[in-house]
Amino acid sequence: MRESDKPGAFTDLGCDDWIDRRAPAAVRPYLRLARLDRPIGTWLLLFPCWWSLALAQPGWPDQHWLVLFGLFAVGAVVMRGAGCAVNDILDRDLDAQVERTRMRPIPSGRVTARQAAVFVGALLLAGLAILLQLPPLAVGLGVASLVLVFTYPLMKRITWWPQAFLGLTFNWGALLGWAAVTDSLAMPAVWLYLAGIAWTLGYDTIYAHQDKEDDARIGVKSTALRLGRNSRPWIAGFYGVTVIGLGLAQAAAGLNPLFLVGLLAAAGQLAWQLRSWTPDDPGDCLLRFKSNRWFGWLVLAGIVAGNLPVCPVVPG
Image (tube, rainbow, N blue to C red):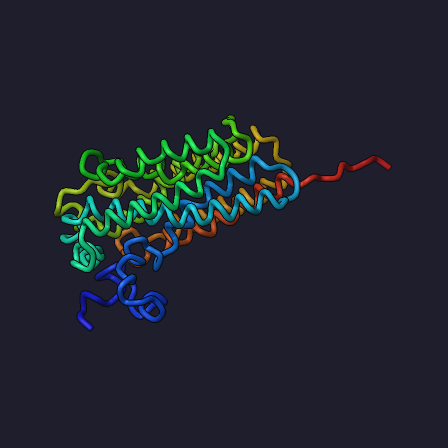
């Protein structure tokens, strides 16, 4: 095996993982193009959807709620794959110059840009089939999200804040989930969306610190480069806004106080990220970034608990 094919600091591709062991050779590059070997991005896209679905559906989860959860899970896998493929098509020349990304399917020559475009088309058709199961407003919001999906990859070329555009894109599900349940939009979904954007600004700034040397060399912009050694206090601010926004979403939705237990636990997870983070260690940056899956689960548990009926205390 070549050194550049090994996982770790040199490349973000896996080696001898489930794709290599179980998938036919012809489809392996497409599975990696869709990042199916690295599910953390799917989780980060999915959680705002699930939060919103849970926020909009009071009481105990029912069958309809669970069906929507499943549809959004499949949709997140499909649309994250499409977004990653679009990103790799547009960034193929840049990815070839970055150590971590140069062995991705397109810059390594395993998939051509034209083949990747056909793959994107197939994924978008699958996404449309899922979207059409939802109410009209949700369908319209889903179609509108394509503007963000196709423009986000360009932002690193024109602004120091591409992470903000990623936040707009990755948290669109906060609006979509609410519309899927209610066929409307309301302030709880808006607060949830804004909280998600701040969350993304935090975790993706941590992630961007992996590539800051290569990004500076090739002229790619990021909040990691813009904020530099001041990243930690800025991320603390982003995470603070996240917690406040989630609290405002809870208040607007009228959740019971059990939600606060989940929110406090989630806030503790964010504090742990910042306290233990080593910005100049790419492996540590990736570890803290991936840990946001636990934050997502804690918030979801808080929302579900906050929607459960609480028996009033009757004075004896």
